[in-house]
Length: 264
Ligand code: 3PY
Ligand code: MG
Image (cartoon, rainbow, N blue to C red):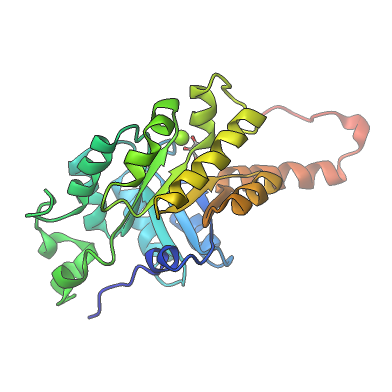
């Protein structure tokens, strides 16, 4: 059978805007439901959400029947975990907390087989190669693998040019929540100084010839980041979308005088 194509990577390479959502529910049914909504990509979050290898695998399986690209965020830089996530069939990884070019280089090596990297060879056991049913897996794996590093600290911003220049880093994604914390604005990802730093970072990433992305659940900020040159956005998380819609529905019917209602 054919190698599954990483159309997300192709879209980044050709500068086509990609709009996505983070998945934090750990639910294959939720992932499948969201796969019908028309987002270009859905990102299974393993950094903050309660996901493990098996729940990530189940969500990848649930979304496989739909024309949506699946990204995964591991919790850390562990090369063994990256090997397992790639083996599970994740082709695009968004790796958090990348502060230096050396860290980015290590991640590139974790993504690649020897002699260019350190990824172990075990396709007979891996969904990525459909257990060796994909006959040209090794010839096609690199063109279909995509590494996005997250810059989300002052140090990361200082090292942005060097990080973005690392060969094998396909794109750089800014994490506003952590960046805001690092800049002294914990809980204020929409602070004017944070937004200005993000727009500046996007310009730097583009100048390095890499695709730039950012998380923005605020549509006005999202427009600002698009204008600065971002080519992929995460528009929020399923958890916030669900909670926001549930609260809005309730408040649309509940009499104003009824207060907040029971606390569950
Ligand atoms: C952040 O905002 O810090 C994130 O990692 C989400 O994009
Ligand atoms: Mg973050």
